[in-house]
Amino acid sequence: MTLLTKTYNQNQGGSAHEVSSTSKKNGHAQLSIQIKSTHAQESAMPEELKRQVQKNAPSLYELFDDTLRRKGEAQSVTSRFVDEDILEVEGLSNLTLHSYVLEAEKLGKKVEYIKTLTVKISD
Image 1 (tube, helix red, strand yellow):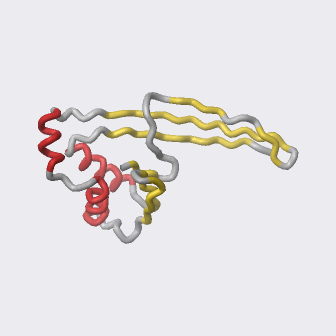
Image 2 (cartoon, one colour):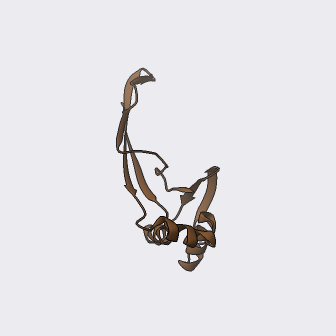
Image 3 (cartoon, rainbow, N blue to C red):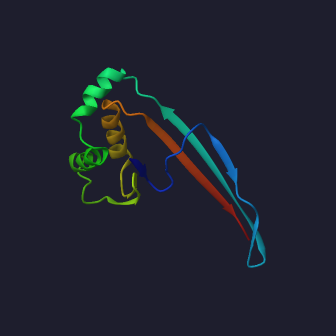
């Protein structure tokens, strides 16, 4: 499952830089520059232990829901699935997100941090 908090999404590989083409809008040129950076964190858990731990573990969504309840944010966070395994979230605190990531790591999950920054320049 991938969590989207505003501009986060799932991606493969290292850093990527993309520049959109210049377009005309109402007779004025505009340019949007999009910078994506990725940091992957592999699990240090041995494969055999990972299989044992994950065998009886809750799903990632159940783990997320449990984390929201434990942190007292279940009522203040809104979420919706935008794809089969992408959950878009609003109102989630950084502390709760970090707690969830730590719980996923305890299950031997690989964690990737993907950040997208878009700068739009126009008249």
